[in-house]
Length: 177
Image 1 (cartoon, rainbow, N blue to C red):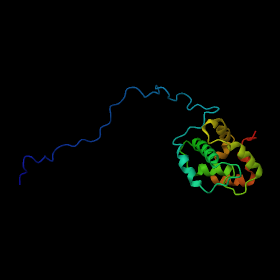
Image 2: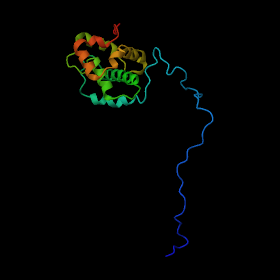
Image 3: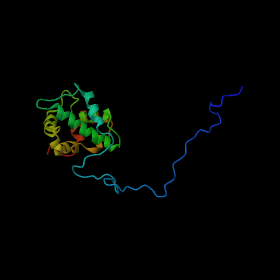
Image 4: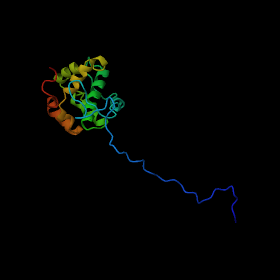
């Protein structure tokens, strides 16, 4: 049986994927603000850049009601400081923050321990004071830089073991100075 003339023919070719034309010259970082040469700059107060670091601000709420604060400690300072340490750890591995980054940050400073050492509480009280206030960026950097990078490269079980055996081993020499 013949088809009416207004019905499209089945012999029409459909278009398939075609690669874009090849570029003769390679891409170059020539826009303002591009990081070129030796990679991301490093130095005092430059921080630890990494992808999607703001995700730590969402993850920190997993610790609501689980952190043990001493008298005079502000939950906003503790959360901000923990997030900052977690972001440094995640940037070491070149990835976005995960819950283990925050677990390690809070373990190092004894916030997951209901009975931390008095010396640790005195040290962290000084380090964390006011770090949630944006103008205290220098203090926030000092807090983050007080943690030894080798500790941040460990897994949560190793950090917890180090904390129980000798909590001071997680810090660079004299973090409270």
